Image (cartoon, rainbow, N blue to C red):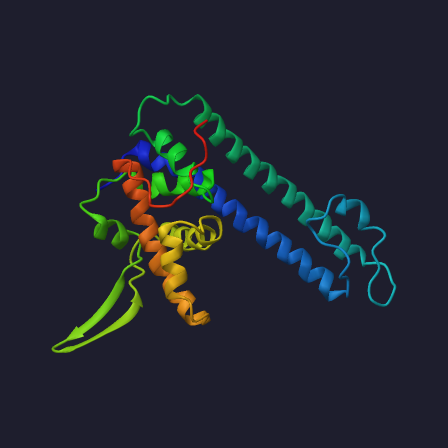
Length: 245
């Protein structure tokens, strides 16, 4: 189904924020690389008043930083401030729209975001991404939901031979990566839920390879459970919800 202009426009804040966070990480890594190049390990780009400490920085040999390097660091800090202000603006505007949205419409996007964000371990950013990227669409069944997210296998069949080639990776990459990250948080914050216990039972051997494989299966199950939560009102077994605001 081709999304409408309104549906596509609703995705822009989340996607813009994701690009801004990537840009923020890039700037911070560039500054860290400069510090390491001169043997400076006591200063981090994310520290407060880092701009005021640049003049007093000394290299591993005890000499001041070169002028061109100082100027580059100041420009990095200026860009970092702009990016952080834009991230904050996107987040505040989203919260403002959620606060003024009518709560009577249960199937509205804002109502879905509020409902998903009540799940302990799920934030507004993840809830907004899931609603606008996948849950607003009409899906035939749970298999279609998992297939769109790219969380299903890609079997290679030829005659009687069948082997799995890993994830299909043909779906929405934002949903897939976001759900895998959410699955790790879900295991931490929802330890008493049936899904978290299912994951713990199948990773009892403690092997990293087993956990890596099963976290994808948990992400698929969790995505389907959240889809049923917003479409049918079915709360997953054992999942703790925050009080309704």
